[in-house]
Image (cartoon, rainbow, N blue to C red; front, side, top):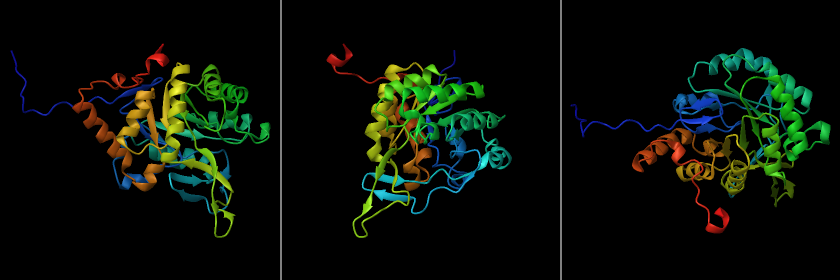
Length: 317
């Protein structure tokens, strides 16, 4: 009979999670638009569960006029405008670089029409791409500029087009600006989404009281950071209860408690955005802290945490 050495180090906790057909080494990944190869200078990018790239549009795009970002008391506003170097640059320059990492590569795409969305989806469905995140929170020129994800019907229509264009796992990035979050989530699922990302930024505005001018060149922009967390957490909870596909929580995540809140609410994984601008190593820290927490609490599998929220008796009934 062999005996274990009580002084030997314990095995590293298993932080792996499933998002549809993908297995991630851990549930922490970047939010699109907040991640680039520059971060490789400050930590090992293979520590992350997945790599989510900045949103790609089909052609080149300069983005919105400056100023594009402003600080808020509870986060930030941005109106970057999705500047893009186009699909050819992604294929020839970005994909070879990111294919050198073990972490699965998730490509975020956006377009202003369903035809353009479907064409772009097909063109980025390349070897080395693990999943496609469809940013359906962008303006739809076929619906007077309203985002696809604002309504269930346009959500379902665009997701069906995207589903027909690729065999890769397809994630739908939802918007908090809709009054029908559950209905749009169900529409995305019905149309073939493999996972939901809850959520994109909330539309906001800030004014410089000295000049009386908007603080963003585009007047309005997307609010992110800590102030966004309760909204994103609520959407995550609602969507995990209504849908059968996995949900990835996104919005205001900066601490271990934030990660745990989203997991307990039902998220299978999380995306970190604004916090990376404040601390470039935050995602690596969160992975390490999650490992320490699971070990300290005897958690052997994150399925013991995911969706473990305990509701009041009247709600549970």
